[in-house]
Image (cartoon, rainbow, N blue to C red; front, side, top):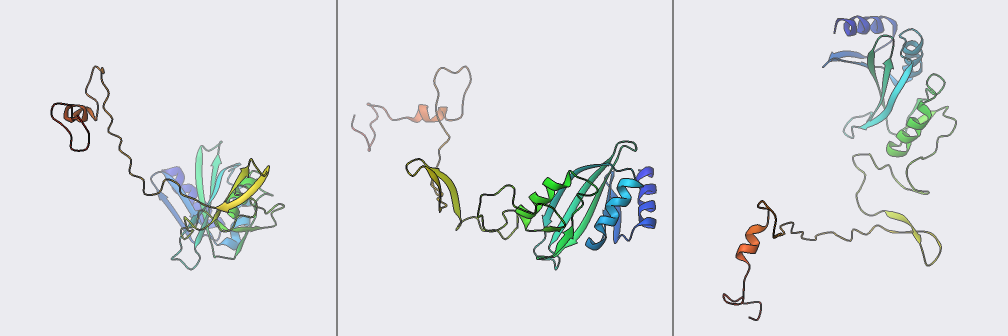
Length: 208
């Protein structure tokens, strides 16, 4: 913990951070979006955080700047991780860090595809996970669960087609109680077998 506190102090003295916290053995640094590239260069070169473990988005719809872009960095020499956060508003872009961490290319495209966060100076800012022509951003909190179309291959037409999403099992009632005979132990549903109607007791819904 003392190493994290020392690291947090050095980061605060070198970078224009808005907040630095050490909690549960983790260091989190919050910086303005305009300073993200400068922050990454400093942590990579001076802080020796050579590995980008992950880059992801977080959606806070009630906030003016609704997205957090979160970077997770690792220093093998120090055996320390740091989390960097930057807030981005809807329709705004944040600088790409591919020039510092080439592995960010895939992560930035994923954040763009799932949240709609654009990264300026990215060499290939296209969707990467959703279908061609997909509308909307699936990991936003306000993304509707119905009303969109799905992509599938039509074996009769021999081509890919779009069609409205159909929830074929909606409102079905599943009964997982199933009696099994011959088991060495009592299984859920055995009480059904004990209460099952037979020819002597009769069943209003069946003939004896």
